Length: 277
Image 1 (cartoon, helix red, strand yellow):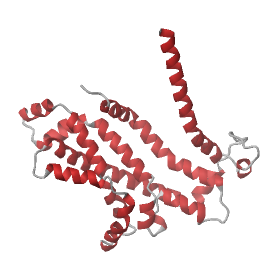
Image 2 (cartoon, one colour):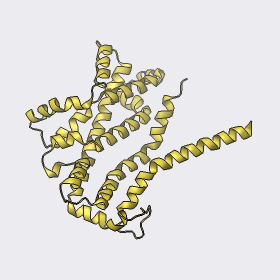
Image 3 (tube, rainbow, N blue to C red):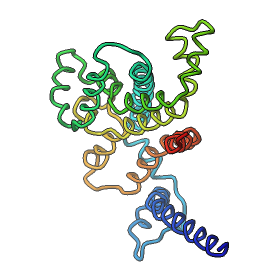
Image 4 (cartoon, one colour):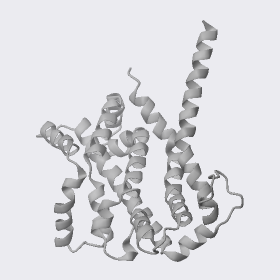
């Protein structure tokens, strides 16, 4: 029986490792292409590892387009949007989980309904609102709409409902009010959910393409995904694949770093969701 369990465990790990390597393969190939010259990229048969490493692709992409400005725009917009989304969702989620007020259930149902509406449906009316506010081609137009979302409220509500109510009762005995209980007790205990929502929001905002493309008009307000589209089609008649892969690597690095920093909380949140007392 032990040998059977051991063989099954080895088989499971082998499948998982194979799947992980298969998913990492495109990224590793993109990374090697970013350090390869154009001749090596189009060599036949294709070579996974470059014969000689070059940084010309990175130097070229930084000199061809204002990549630093694109990077700053994406990082600034994603960071502020994430902070706003997490804070607003945590407040609303706690209110729906713990507080009693009129029309609580109907309001929550409406929030759930908004999750079923495709984001593309809201683009045109949202653009008209931004135009009336004179916010077209501004940071406000790219930040504020992303701060509000039904998924974040739903996620935080479900996590707050899992917390023991006795902790809040103890905080009330100590003299804490509603906001005191939220900031001193509930929010620190919800760190895994906050980190998970923050990672999801940051990655979604960082990768957003359609809305920044529609609401921006100047080059200085472009984000990295929009800049990638212009790099591919608008700067040269010939596509420089080495520059494109170098650009893509620059786009991927912050997201990977964020996930590595928050992976402990992310995994804890997933595990806590699967554990029932």
